[in-house]
Image (cartoon, rainbow, N blue to C red; front, side, top):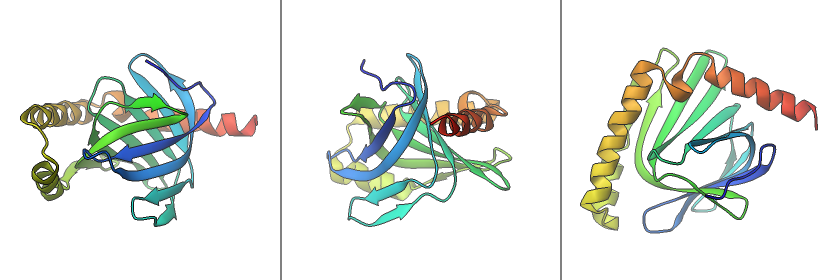
Length: 178
């Protein structure tokens, strides 16, 4: 598999199942790479929606992309703690200096106390019918949601204590060296 390089700035492109662009994050700095994950971070980065609207992220975020799991995790560092936004999605691919994945609508919002809420179930069912998610994809999403919830509840991966803070520290130090 093709990977970005540590220190490289990349874009992140989220697509829908019908191959249409969903959202673009314009600058994320790659902090770490392994065969299982790519970790990046950004702060106040420009985001463009499919309809052309743009906005800037409000806080620093550490991005965690898996090569094998069907979800990715954004760790948002706020004054009152780390919030997590988890997208059920295809594993990422790296192409033309861009991390790309298919967003499968379901999201899990995780609060600093690691309580969580599953979001966008109506959108998932609507798009599942409209875009023809296969039974195989639907089963994968269901299984991956269970894996994600288990990771949250057992505080593994990006939900481990100090994870987001550590990678934000690495990000800030990398920026200072530029």
